[in-house]
Image 1 (cartoon, rainbow, N blue to C red):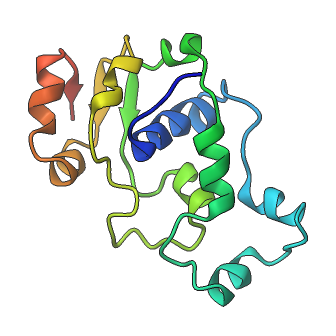
Image 2 (image 1 turned 30 degrees about the vertical axis):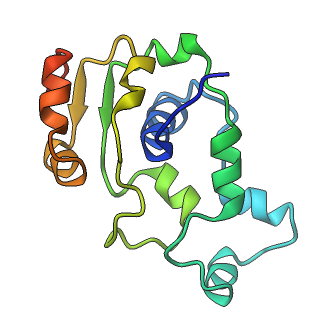
Length: 144
């Protein structure tokens, strides 16, 4: 099993493979997952339990336990950080993007992506992780 050190970095990889490329399946839907547990109104559930600014345990567990085969990781040539990612909405369905909930904390997981060539969202990344652009440049990974 591939182990990621930074959960939020893993989410970027999941966004690319599951929601963009559709090669990591099945596609996770928090609404469907919660309906199977008897929760029909996800937004009401989040508000009633004061979970607006957190990653729901059900999503965190699913994505933490999700194994991404090395063969799929080797297909990732580009990663993007964007506050509107589907994976973020699956984790925190009423998240407003106004905090650091999904900030990347380290780039140790770059070793898992041997063909990564481009990281889009360089301003956001540099804000989250000062010095990150130099790390990417040293690995030959372009940014925009």
